[in-house]
Every structure is written in C-alpha cells, then in structure tokens.
Amino acid sequence: MEPARQAGSMGVRRLQLSAGISSVIFGIRQLSFSIYLGKDFIKLDPASIGLLFTISQVFGALCAVPIGMLSDKFGRKRFIVLARFLQAVGFVPLIFFTDVPIILIGLVLLDSGSAISSPPFNALLADKSPLEKRNTVFSQNYVAISIGSAVGSAASVIPPYLRDNYGYGGIESYNPLFTILFFVAVSSLGVMLTVHEEQRPKEDKLNTPKGGKHRGLTSANKIIKYSLTLVMIQIGAGMIVQLFSLWLSLAFGVTEREIGPLYVIINLSMGASYFLANWLATLVGSVPSIVVTQFFATILLVILPNIPNFEIVGVVYILRTAMMNMSSPILTAFICGIVPTNERASALSITNSAGAVARATGPALGGYEMTVSLATPFYICGALYATSTLIFYTFFRKNKPGECD
Image 1: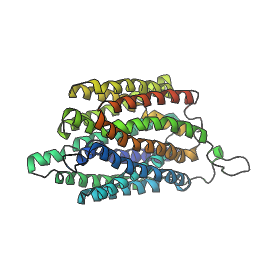
Image 2: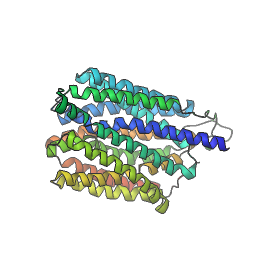
Image 3: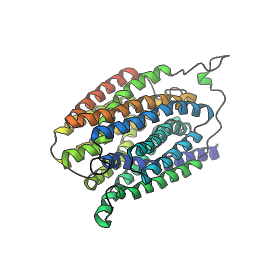
Image 4: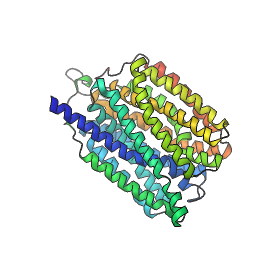
C-alpha cells in the first residue's frame, strides 16, 4: 500500500509541475496578446481583437466535450498529451507570420489545447487524490499555476525591453517571446509524458444499474445546474479579464512596462489566496466559502471603473482577483466530488465547454462596449457575477464534497 501511495503522490507532483509550466503561457497570454494585436502592432481595434478571441475559444470549447467523454472511457493522459502538443504547435504561426488569418490559426490551436486539457487533467488529478486531501491537492495545483502565471507576466516585459535596448521593431520584438513559449509548451508536454495513469476500470458501480449498462450521465442534473452558473460567470470574465490589460492601456495610457509588474503581483497574490481558500473551506464548508469570496470580489469589481488612478486600480484589482479566484480549487474539487468517478472528465468537459463558449462571447461584447464606454463592461460583469453566485448557493447548498466518492 505504501509504494502505491508514494507513486500516487509522485504522480500528483508531476501533474502539478506540468500545470505550473503550462501556466506560463497563460500569464503571457492574458497580458501581452491583446496588446500585441492592438493598434500599435497588428493594428486591430478592441472589437476585432475580441472577435478573434471569441472565434478561437468557441472552437476550443466545441472540441472539449467529445475529448472529455473519450478520456473517461480510454484514459486521461493521452488526451492531456495531445493538448500540450497542440499548444506547442500553436506558437509556430505566431513566430513566423503576422497575417491575421494565420494568427487566428495559432490562437485556435492554443485555445483548443487549453480547452481539451482541463477536464481530463482535473479528473486525473482527482483520481490520484484521496478525498481527505483533495482540497489541499487542488489548492497546491492552483498555487503552481499562479506561480507559473506570475513568471509569464514577468516575461511579458521582454518585447518592450528589446525595443528600447536593442532596436527591435514593434512586431519583431514579440518573436523571441513566442519562441520561448513554444519551448515552455514542449517542456510541459515532456513532464506530462512521465506521469503514470492506472488502467481505467471497465465498470463503475456508482454509475451502473443492477444487471444493466451505462445509460447516460447519472449526474446530468448537477451538470446542467452548475453549467448555468458557470455560463454567467464566464460571460462576465470574458468581458473583463481577457481584455483588462487592453482596458488599462486605453484608460491610463500604460504599456507592458507598467502592466507587467502588476500582473506578477496579481498572480502571486492568487497563489497565497488558494491556501486561505483551503482554510476557509475547512472552517465554513465548500459552498459557503465559494459564495462569500465571489460576493466580495463582485463588489470590488464594480468600483474599478470609478477609480481615476492607475496605482489604486492595480491594488483593487489585485484584491478582486485574489478573492474571485480563491474559490477555484475548492470549486473544482467540489464538482469532482459530487459526480461519479467515471463521469468526472465528462462532467468537467461539459461544464467547462459551456463556460468556455460563454467566456468566448465576452471579449467580443466587452471589446464593443469599450469602444462606447470603458465603464459599462464592469457593471454588466458585476450583475452577472452576483446573479451566478446567488443561483449557485440555491442549487448546491445541500450538497456535500465527496458524496460520490
């Protein structure tokens, strides 16, 4: 038993390492991509940038559902490896081309890799985590992700540094950054290849009627309810989070030089908040901790556009992001625990895809709203967050973590 437990622990650590390395991509993506596509470089307006993000993310979301279901049947690891491979290939068009249609191909590959990776990854992490340690394991994983994202945010200063000190042209200054990200994706893929996955059981007693076979998802009702709450959250997130660096640029005239350090602090503060989330969930329970943190994060969000100072906006956004994301590991562990083991990746792929499609509509809507008013996207997002939090509490207040383990 002890060797098996040690092997499981090693698998968890390797999964967390792979996630941390891969999240470097996210750290740069959330900061630099919208600026790179903006008026100073590729010369797209906010609405067009939002539309590109929407197209690429919808495509990725559509791929995630069948991949999640297949991973429940044939194993998680092979599909995570496929996702990491797609992410690596996605940087090739960005390194060598500046044509918008080819850039879109790269974005589609990147977002497809990200979308199809998450459900089997979280399902595999849950498989390797005993119930009593699952909140801790997911919190540790999110800490690894936040550290990787912080490294990515710090690396976003490379383009302006190359322009200022080595005479690189505007667009050319991003090529070294995209090349680094290609090797980051390859490294994450390499770590994932070392993870061992146990053979999938042919039957799951939690999901198989007596004398019968599987007849659809037994957790469909929970999946639909959670998807509804997630859709509202992700529409709002798509409007603000993916375009926030662009919003800062438009509102205060700042560049990656000023925004980069802010995002480093944001991602590191998120890492600290994940440990607080585990403590809060232990103290008051999973559902109350999720509701409380999202409620206070929503309040901080809606006051942001009324603050005229970049530094104060930065402090408030750091607090808001830490509060909103504090519940993420607890929420993921909670969902994994209220559906049967052999439905985890399917449930996560369906809910994640619903959220991803919703999130993909956000940039187009938020980009358009920014051309009209820089404040309106925050108010719409706040209303969506508040409604989602209320509905989530109504739906899941009686559910307990691990009830299907």
